[in-house]
Structure formats: structure tokens, C-alpha cells
Length: 428
Image (cartoon, rainbow, N blue to C red; front, side):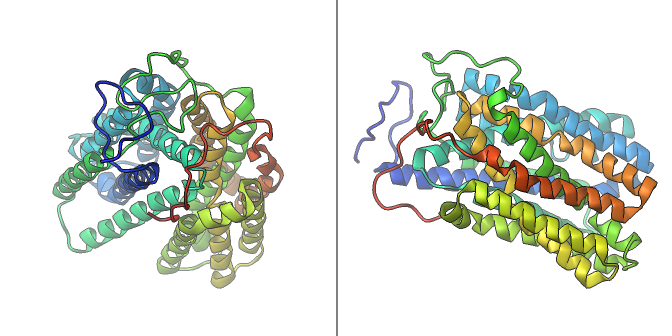
């Protein structure tokens, strides 16, 4: 078998692939599967909430406090993920965190009482946030190594995993399957998938920044990253763009069904269809978005997306009939789809340390998860639901102005040269 050109450490696994393009294909498939697993955990937890609320007799306020523990856990883990990866290696850290997330999936339904739900969701949030940073860093490293956009497709796979898990949860509820048994079985299946995907993660530091981490162990020549990776000035603008996009995305996800019911007067079936259309529009756009990015570049893609999402928001605010509202929600999904993956991709191109840049941007970007639901709720209570969606529209429109932050400086050399030879297809 042909040896790789990259030098191998004495304790590194032997070369498994004949050339760099074979490596990139295997890594791409592995990272795609990691994103699917992460999305399936999220979708499974979302469909478990009605049972959890009824079983533990939680009031809406108590359930909100329980769910608030997950983003707190994420914010504890995200800024420190790169430090952990420096100690044990990028691939090992990604594998360990995603496996931990899968193992913790049944924790809320097995907690045995409302009090234990708080630490259960805190731990879930920590595992989800840490693995989120690491899998995005893996994706950005693959982009930098291959010279091709892949982040949109990866996030599309996350949406697809979430949708599949949500659909499976609805079917299981219709069949009256025991939720505890279902989550245990789902956890076991996802553990196997995560373990299998972890075998294909990057076996070297190709595509990573000079201050970053190895795959199976720390790079002895690289300085240790900061213990707590707060955003640097170089990536602050990218983080703000990410915040605006995820604010609009998270608020639409949480409030679209309520808006269609309260402001439009539609029934629960139409409300469910509106949310599903929003998610399907976002998923489809992300799955095929890498082709658009390769043609137009990230700045134009995010700017155009902000305009499309803002137009969708105007339709939602101005019309009080279901079909224009649903069309508006679909446009919001299409317009916001590219923001998060391209924000992570831009962060990897601008910072000196890929892992720290991704962690810093994730910290700002996902801050909206704490702010958006409450901000929309307060606005809706004070000025009505149309005013709340007007706030979402303004946040989406801000992307058209902030998109320039994603532009790569012309004097910044790529972390690694693109792989020679014909380019690999977008979906491997």
C-alpha cells in the first residue's frame, strides 16, 4: 500500500488509505456521521419533552428552568474544549464527547425525579457543547486541508438527523412505545454509530492551525491553548454575525408554531406543518449549500441569505393568513441556513488557533440560545406576536450588513494547500 507523504509518529496507526483524497473522503464520511448522531440526540430529546413534563408533573416554568441547564452546560464546556483536545488529541476528544453525549441520552427519563433533571440536563449540555465545538473544528480542518467548502453539508446532515429522530419519536408515541426503553435502545444504536464514525477522524494535524491539536495525542511542539477560550478581536465580528443568525433561527424554531396559532388563528396541524416546512427548507438548503458557496463565496451567500430571510420575515409580519405566513417561514429557513456553517468556517480561517477560534465563535453564537426565547416572549407579551417576529426580521436583515466579517484577509495564507488532483464531490 502506498505510504502517506505526512510523517507518521511512532505510536500512530499505520496508513490506511492510498492517497490524500481517499483520506479526505473517509474523514468527510466520518464527520458527516458525527453530525447526524449529534442531531439525532437533539431530535430525540425534543420529542421526549411532553412525556417528561407529564411524568414528572413539571409546570411550564419548571420545565423552562430544567431546559435552561443545557445551554449553561454548553457554555461551561465550549470555551474549554480546545484545552481538553490539546491534552488527549482532537480525534480522541471528539470521539469521547460524542460517545458521552449518546450515553447520557436516557439520563432525563431515568433521573427518577424532577430534582435530578437539573444535573442531567447540565451534563447533557456540557457533552453537547463540547462535542459541537470539536466536530465543527474537524469539519473546518477538513475544509482547510482540501480547499473545498463542506460545512454547509455537514450542518445539513445535523438537521437531517434531528428530523429523522423527531419523526421516529412521533411514530413511537403513536405506537405507545415505552419512552425509557426507546431511549435506552436509541442510545445504544447511536453509541455504535459514534464509535464507528470516530475511527475515521483525522489521523494527523493536516489542515489544523499551528497552535492546534493532534489527533490521537497532543502535539509536543505546539504551545498549550488557553484554559478558557474567550473570543478574540479577530473573530468578534464573525461571532456577532453568528449571533444574529442563530437568534433569528432559534426564535423562529421556538415560536413559529405559537405564532401561526395565536396570530394567524390556524389549528395545530397547520402550526406543525409550518414548523416542519421551516426545518425542511433549512435542511435542504444546507445539504446543497456547499455548491452555492463554491460559486459565490461565503460573504455573498450569507448576505443574500440575510435578504431572503428578511423578506420572509416581512411576509410573516404583514399577512394574517396561513399560506403567506408559511411561505415566509420557508424563506426564513432558506435564508438562515448558511449562516452557522459559514460562521464556523470563517472562524477557522481567521484565528491563529483553529480550535480556539471555533470555540470562541461558538460561545458568542450560541449565546442566542439563552437570549432569543426570552426576548421574543417578552416582546410578544408587551407588543404582540407580529412585533416579536419583526424583531426576528431585523436580526435576519442584520446579516446582510455583517456578512463582510466572514471575508478572508487577502494576505492570510491557507493553513494547508488544497489537495492536488480532481476535486472530490460535495457529498461523499
